[in-house]
Length: 173
Image (tube, rainbow, N blue to C red; front, top):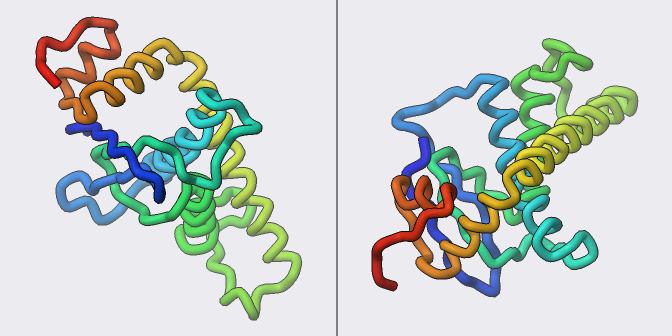
C-alpha cells in the first residue's frame, strides 16, 4: 500500500525505497515480480524522460519512497538483477531450472551457471518490458507526478490521487 512519495535532490544517488508491509517476512512470486517491475521502472522512466543515450549510471534525480521493501542496491538494474538471481537460485521460482537450489558459485557446473544467467536476464528483461508498458500507458500521469514532486517534494496518498487525475493541490510550498 502506498503511503507517501518523496523526492530528494541529490548528486550522489537515488533509489526506490521499498518499505515492508507490516511484519511482512515472505513474498509470493507475484509480489517479487512486481518488485522487479518497480526496480526496472526507474531505468525505464529515466530513458523516457532523458532518452536512452542519456541514461545515467544509476544516479537519477528523484528519490522515491514507496510502501514496499527496500532492497538496498545502488542502482535500478543492480537491484533487479540481485532480486532476480535470488528468485532463481534461492527461492526456486524459475520454471526452467525448477525446484533445485544450485550449489555455491564455485561448485556450480558451467551449464547450470549459464542457465542461471539466462534466467536472471529473462526475469529482468520481462520486468523491463512490463515497466515500459505501464509507463508508456500512463505517460501523462507519470509526467504530472514528476512535476508535482519537483514542486512539492513530498505528496501523501490523497495528493498523489489528485495529481494523477490532473487536479490542483491546495497547499503552499
